[in-house]
Length: 399
Image (cartoon, rainbow, N blue to C red):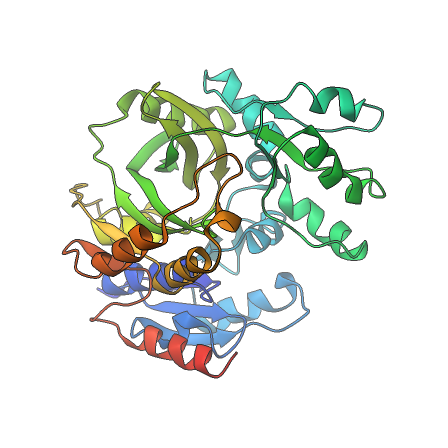
């Protein structure tokens, strides 16, 4: 039996590539859409057809035509920008089910302030937070906060256009060492009268719980911990490892309750900082999309893209039993960039108030990881080697 066609919108990253591979290996014909002919998912042996998306055109102007031409039954999207655009379109276009969250639910997970409010309602703690507002005494408030403090936008997509118009860079995260440093970092945004969310530093490590929600229940669960990030001071995961589902059961129940409270449908990652010394979990955010470390889940046997497809396509059959293996996954090129950062200036990439990473220790760990028998890679796969080849050629050409 030939399964219905799936469109994967956004195959320019390792996340989109993972979705293509997962669906393709299970017999789904995949139409991959990328921003250029150099999109990494184009090179996968599991891409049945590749489409370059038109530039500077709304999805509604060209997507229905692609759906008609391919006969696609479902569409899965990768980026937040596309999720936002699709949230306002019909849930079914030309007979194709758009498997993305609706605007009202998406708004809750995109806005960290609203996310923390929902979390508090189900008993999940967040870090000490302050959202600066017009008319407040910033100096007085800054004097009461714990340091180091972290600055990040409560709703990043909502700020992209405003920051660009004001000639200000979008910074995913910044650190303030004390009240004086914090006030200085807030000044550039005075003209906008909109400021980043300020949160106190939380110890421990990055810990994520992933769930596929359908009908108010989790149909698939998975969890991992971050081992390394790029930049080294905090960013995308470059090395992560599975965590058995027998651990953190009570917190998994809370994560599921949070998504149920929001009314979430589809995949999501509930991201925490976890301090094992105190047993504390601080909610950082909800990723209401396929997350950066999706390759780890897929390689371990937790197939979120397939489960989302299967929930929408009756012909796909029943779910496979969730037998997860103990795995690690590495984003090799960003992991190498992380090491270069540390070798150049370890103090510059350390979190304020934290001990700088050791050049020697980090170099040894970087090299030894290549020998770890359970480590897979975000891009490299011996069964599907061409995406890595294409990515290396793109890098060498400086594209």
